[in-house]
Image 1 (cartoon, rainbow, N blue to C red):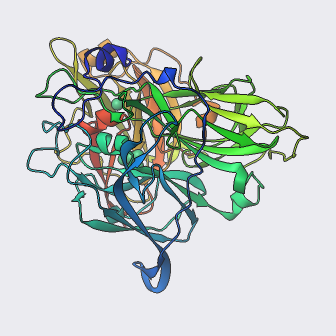
Image 2 (cartoon, protein in one colour; image 1 turned 135 degrees about the horizontal axis):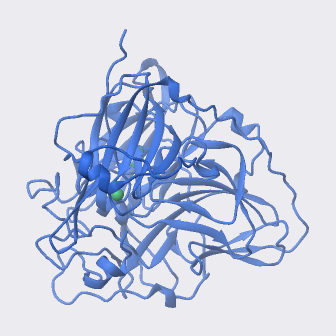
Image 3 (spheres, rainbow, N blue to C red; image 1 turned 90 degrees about the vertical axis):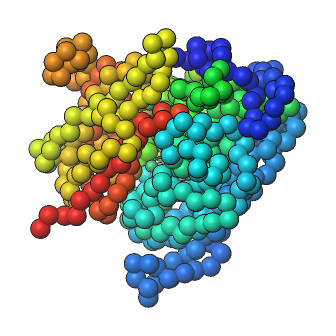
Length: 523
Ligand code: C2O
Ligand code: CU
Ligand code: CU
């Protein structure tokens, strides 16, 4: 993967904003901002505005939430002018929705965005043609086992002034999900503008573990961004005004719950951080300045069998890590959270005093492995990249197929399949399937040239098991270059049309996304 400098940074017009002609504002060097002067925002919890009948059983009533997508201004740092951005109910990340496993909710997602987009739309991209409104959205709940009509199909977008009611049955284990825009051809821009938020499913098994709660349970939403010197969000465009899409966006600053370099006052105690990488393309390697290991207790789709302690926790776009940090030995100190060897993104100010105690259980939740023998089918699916004669990335596809080609992945409801992701590119692609949770079987190097010449897979390395922090239920998996990454899933919940895609949003918007269809169970 070419880093920012190679493509976006070198040739991008910094700070370009849709529709604003004339000189564009220069990019802010966020590294020069004073650090740790803003308090970390506690994302507010969404409150239902009433109840409505359960669409699956009219006799029952479900909590009903009204979430409005709107534009507002927010100061991301003390020393910057407020930035225009988009979010839900006036904030980004939007209010956190809290649900219980097995108890459904209804959410009305209302598009009350302005008529004009914050960023430049590339009308060459599939689904973003000029006959479509510039401002349109559809919300997807990432990781939810939701019926197809509530899943936020990319083509089911609607324009400003419209809304959609989604039914989330929450028939799944406790986990950290997130909601975000999914509108075809522009979701990289909509999410970048701020259309994302956290959704937590809780259950009794998790409650019984006595994990840190209340003040000591905090979602951390990390989003890398670029700002103009006047404090406005800036998104890259290519040097060719006729084709503004860039293959990956990398920022130079990381918003944590909407702020740059925030601080958080903590007690000398255990804290639970539900971390989401909400960036377009940036991968994070999280660590603490103290060098202390971080206990990872959960992954995308819920708890791990036991805590995994590591000094570095890696998160690709779309992935979540449920972390527990013990500040009890750090009284009266400051600890920073880093996303690379040198980049501090937030500070924890640990209060003086004796440890407030709290122990992390060593057994969390069993993760029963799906045996390979349960699979009725293995699909070989390629990840492809096409380059221009100049070597620039043009597009990436799944299975060498465009979005609008006939559906080829058609698992039957309640069957198990293995999907072998054959990565023919030079990049890591975080591949996400809607509807299902899966397990990673292994990753294995193969001979790419031999594959290109013969279409046959010849392995040249041993099969590597998933990292300990990935050995739970996942919905997004890093497919490494020149490797076959195998995942196994039971396609349960609902029959109908869903999608799978790369979660690098620039790739997704340029057709590294395919529909798939769960067929009704065979009887
Ligand atoms: Cu996070 Cu298809 O989405
Ligand atoms: Cu999803
Ligand atoms: Cu990708």
